[in-house]
Image (cartoon, rainbow, N blue to C red; front, side):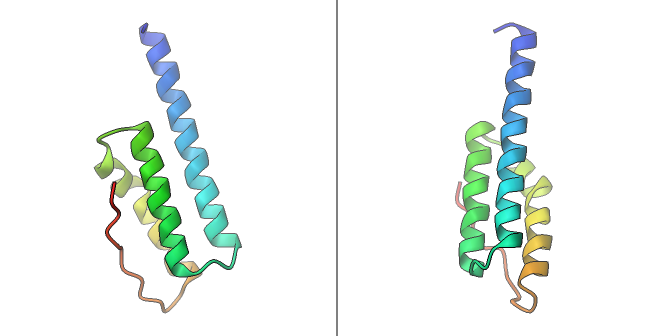
Length: 88
């Protein structure tokens, strides 16, 4: 693959991940799903991210997990939600 093609592919994967994260956050924020199901969506989004960027678990946990934690804390106040083990 040429360098420009590699960059285009990475840009495409980044956009796919951004859309997946935005969609998951929208569903969690705008629907009446239980907390457990919301965590399942976070885990599914993480699996999708790792499918697009294998071996980048730490990057997801540093960039996107805090965003999901803030959303879940706001959406489910008083739930004292802890981060479940998010299997890859």
